[in-house]
Length: 353
Image (cartoon, rainbow, N blue to C red; front, side):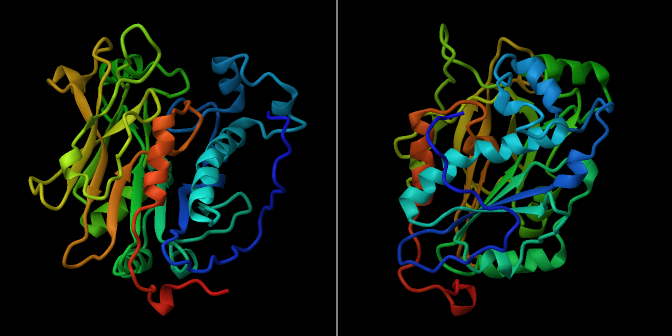
């Protein structure tokens, strides 16, 4: 841990609404999981659960052998691993806070204290960019309720809003055990079981909002030969009307990223802005079918029914668990400085002092 004193931290308090500031975007993160459900999973189950801290320590040794990670200072079991995800977005929150002048609000569907918070006006009223991180296991049966869907639809009527959906990987969806093993050896992460399926909440939200995308597989990015650096993105700059990938060459390396497969042929409503080359030295059913890249960043521009933008990008792109590069910080800043409407937002969606 850094020797520089950290800012004081608060916990388990009510959210303090952020005032609207012209041209300054207010960003919120929404973790779709039930923290208790995930933390209480039986660690003897092989599949569809997060790692325990014991497993993390064993695989990442000696990264977590300092006293700051022992039972006196840090949660053990699966709960500790969930907290690693929370800690991993602190750099993103810092960058965005510096750029916008607003702190990044962080919400959970069901938090450590057992409070359930659906997406509604309490979240949306002072949010311009909502990042929905789909790290709920399918088995936990998290679904977007009709009231949440209607709230998001109404919120997307406000000009300048941006909904970023981040369904995570879907590893080992098949009943074919040989394919599960092939997928496992492809990504090479000992902390990911042969089956780990994520994103029911985001999938239900995408279906309701007409987002023609499905998260598939967990694919290992290629690296630049002779280095440990992730291979550059293939970028469709002509489609990037918002400049979201200006100055961006790579995201961060993560060994099992989802392919955002399009389920429509309508190329006007949905644009694939970036594709990531795949590690072809490690066999996978997706590459055996002839694919060499996967869709990693998607933009759905406003249309006649929606004033806001919809983006799709994996949640790990906004974390530091898997390293970070200057290009990634540029991407974060581009997202934080997306243009807002020229006028004030509607009163019912404007944060109150």
